[in-house]
Length: 408
Image (cartoon, rainbow, N blue to C red; front, side, top):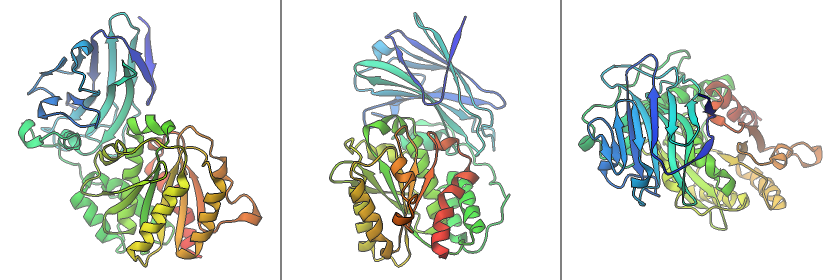
């Protein structure tokens, strides 16, 4: 029988027949579970966590390593179903290295499978796939996103009362790698990461290493994050790619600005939505916030103004490092250029990070002409899937131009 292999991020349509999702894991004991989520991305109640101690709920059941979803029985209030595999918490220090394999079977449809890229950052839980409603029909997306927070941490992100539901402790975090020494400058930030967000400790160490390599380990900056919220970004929000990107920026912030908070501006419409992501609330935060924002049309200039206004009102004396994720061209290029020029004297550095499927020639060419050079601007192409870029290379791309600007 021919089996169609799905790529990470790929989605396909489903019929209304029952879907059987079988998980196989190599190298460690693991538990399989499912989460039933409403349109807000959270469970309706604690019963929506389906696992070995609560094996069935509203047409969804878990038996060993198999999740079965009878789509005709799933209530209308359930917008999506997330399939999760987590390292057995009774195996201290167990983490995923080889990615779990998922087989997808549905009567009358071709057999499909999905294997995510292997993991390298101490992941203890993996979101393998999600079934979701779109236009009155069901679809399935291959996700393959790993986290180091364990099933308990992930369940909390989706609104489950873990103490009441999980009769297990979250998987212990393995000892952090010590491949690079921690310098005195950012030690407070890394200490706070280890205490409040241990899952971010490894990327924070890589961010610290990038700062050390650029000789700015003892410098401080107010880190901001602007996220493209155009409709063409919907799949990247749904697949947790934007969440993962925001987590990496937060880890960088902890080494530059020790308050553990990054103001986040969603670039959408005339009134950009501003909130924050912190070390103590980051898990699932982007998914929770972006559902409160309408899809926009490339109005990045308004989001830039909002970030600069917040920076000026804060009274910060350190420079601002504004990481601006862009997925396509801006609609008012002259306005963006004007903002870049006018903010140069304010101590604001703009890093445009491109990922998505749009054309980004405007951002790539901002400094291409010697007659229109912006000293406080750089562009970093993070590819269509920034999660696949190793931490060391990702943070080098994020800080190299900023470091040169600081030293100028």
